[in-house]
Image 1 (cartoon, rainbow, N blue to C red):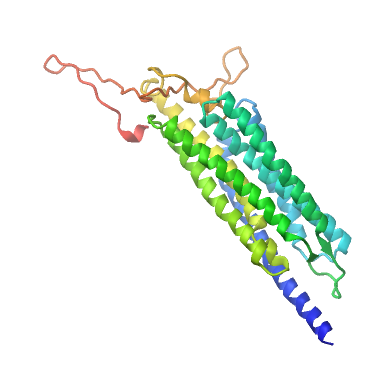
Image 2 (image 1 turned 30 degrees about the vertical axis):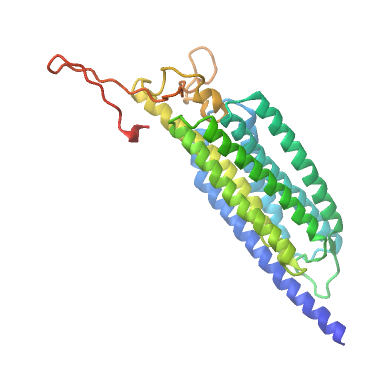
Length: 348
């Protein structure tokens, strides 16, 4: 009798924890939809006219996969559908693999950003490829091992949500430890590059690039630490997965938003360069260009075709030498002198 009452209590507690986790997951997907609708006009304006590139393909693949496919799968899983234990396990495994795919694709965009921030340094590219493989290969392996330990049982009540009855959640904690390590290493690289390579530069685009990256690292680090703590400390029920879907969605939202934000600022500087005849933004000394370093975010079409060429014209080049913004000169005669003036900071 005591065992029966204990079993019933465990089932009720597990059901309550699972429903709480599912509600949070559905709320997270609602945020994904809201973000998609909010940023869709920017996507049409900033992404659709651009030349085809690997970052662009990755952006669209990630954005529409996590909105239309992954989100639907995770939402359906959280609904009471009366699945058998085997059906629950199949659905759980599918969502698990889909979740890690979304996070790794999001980090792919992050790695491309760091490569661009380094000025497309070949040694940095080799290292980033090494780190990407060295961290994400064991991440996949650990997740596969974790998914193999997840078990579902037949519940005495029909038409309820899927409730994992058993799993080695410490393996899932290890997955988030690896992801956290990857985020921290990339953050340190970004800080190093900002202090050593770009310290003397005065570029709004560089500032946006760096600031968004740090914000991305902080948010995802907090969520990764939260998932590690919850997986270790939470009871053996659905609460162990409380923040998993939130972190998956945050990865996708932040990575795509950062790319849109970069393109928005690049477009703004391009229009300012056009308004002022390119002075203060194009020309001047310096090694390299913002368009060279950030070509995946700044080289995009102006909405028209080049005459007879059939190719999209790229942004005008934005120099960033030691003094990336050469002051515009306004020459006028007043008491036989020539004066120059700096454009207001709002123009930059």
